[in-house]
Length: 434
Image: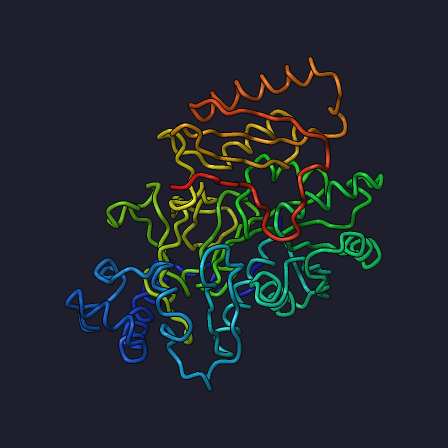
């Protein structure tokens, strides 16, 4: 495959060059934050630090962390690094708990963010001859605006469909011959399912690549989407707090996501002690934004669990790679003392031929945690033969026990009976009062 980069001199820079950029930009950013963000300056002072203590990325571990709790406490303007008159936009999280995260952007911040998304599109094989359909939500959600801007920078014809209205999505894919699809993986799976029902085979679908993020998805789900749509499915990673999608992205190797290290320094820490772990260890991902002006977060705890590697990549990009997040340190389910990630459950379901349409319901009955997994049967396996359903349920119970180390109750339900999501899929309902 021909190697294509949006900014080759950056994406293939030597490790020495990357470290030099990071050292210079971190020193400058710490001074910027010290001078302009009283909230963070106070956190530094509490640790007895001044900007002079930070000479480069080797000193990064000295700085205090920023967490979601800090963002809530400082809401709305307490972490801004630029005057309001210099800011041109906000974006916000989908916000399922408490106050939303509101992130601020200067025009320079938006330009750099769009560059990162353009790199992701070109890493997925995109060029100025492609038609890129952006089916992430627009508005406050970062998915739509980020990929929209990146698509423009690459020079693709951009179809800003936003999420929802599946019939119209499919009409545009067919009529305008869309070649790249950007949306959540659960919505990509739903579009694939809908096209299959319309009798469309992969060779009748013009798409060649998909850039999917904003929620956890397994390798099995990737294969499922690739087979149904006849595409290569690429992962993209981002957080509103850091800009949005494009913090990291997959290349042709599809073995993890390159972090844009000229803009973000990544660390992996022990989520319990905060200690920085050596490369290759599994732990919580922490990011420092070294080029953001309006919302410059240092050592932001993402709660995502992953590993980092500098192993040489066949695509020629030299930036460090992060694994697909294996779950989260905060929404990881602890059931009867066992750590359970929804992605583990999804893997078992897909390996057994089920689609990725399921819901995990956790409750506590008589002081004991219960785990109930509702799974949609595919139209092909749907039956009203109770004996057959019982057999299928028992098979899944056994496979889940093998994967998780605990027993889950499995309930098979009719196709299409679990509500479809056009944004982030609601996979887990935790009814426990913990």
